[in-house]
Length: 520
Image (cartoon, rainbow, N blue to C red; front, side, top):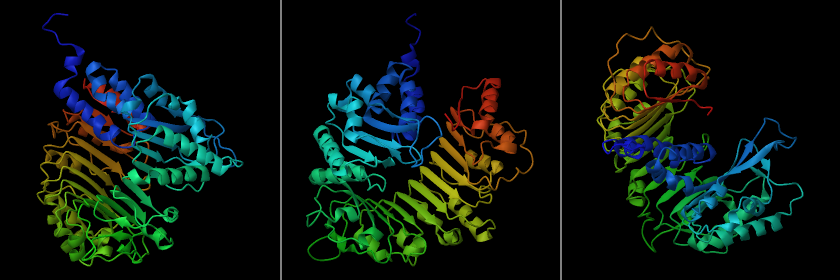
């Protein structure tokens, strides 16, 4: 090769590398990284040395163990007759990269399964032959099931001792007490007791009432608590308010008491470091009542708020939310109350999620006006998720979100002309997902797509068309036109039955677009 020619590493570097790998970073590496995602990253890492170096840390950062079912049969107790454990632990050990691993995740798919003793399962994978001192998080997200004759205390004690020996640096232990596996619950409880002085995340429930502590250590910065469980528990140690940065309260009903938290010796209880707060209350419960003075006084540095049915928590949600300097706001609200929100609340947001409660098909004009005003309000928002169920066609007017890069729409009805108008007004949009909410309501498209071929976006790189069915059906011509009017498109996700059509379409038009479906 002459000096004037570029190597594959050079061609795959620079802006091409940044654009292609941004999809990996955003959608694979940072969220639920498991077997399927690991395989994708491993394949991308083989493209060239540049990509291997860029993706290497994601290949080894998370170790996982998954129970995979090899057929659809189950025994009488819900365990699979044919299943196996799949893990990347062996690959990490073979590469000598266990010192770069930060997370260990366990997962079983769909149904509870009988498992061997946890420590023996890890040892069989070669876990004990490597140094895992850099691991900070272990999560038990699997639906484990114990053998009927398992000696619970013995198995839990020996497995916990094994993990304590090999994972000295744990700071996060995620999961909860399993109704199927007293062994896993016993491991979880023993790990909490041992690592409590160094934990920075804690899930508070009834199982913590046995701790012989007056208060939890100052290292706890993240907590999740179920207010309903706490109301039934006794002897829960108190939590220092000052160090907390993230707090989630589920079932935040009127019985919840702030007495769980320890503040200054005198004065109003304050969470001076709390930046992220999530509040939710089950329908039918009386929610915890808060006013603007309480929110501002207790959470002076709050930047991210996730709240279900804010009109139930606050007498005047707009007055409360308007007084906060939020960067991220997630709202789940009854559709009939959405029109009460002042769209000016989103002006300074960087991240916005709105999900409406489902259950009605006929919508009034006030709801349409509320959505139109929301989109027409000039905002700094960079990422948005709008789950507008049920949805009319709210994309007919002006959109003033010039910095929006990532958008997810979950709707009841496809509105292709509206999507084209929407995309054309978002100059920075790089990723768009359109999800169809119900296979029971799959309305026929109105009319035929136009013959207009002019580009509607030169920034959009990723397009996901989701459907509750396995095909968009009669909407196919509209999706085709949408794809062909986006010259910058790099990745397309479509329902599985539509993939062959779009593979052929891309080849016919000689476009370089990767086409995927949801069964790969």
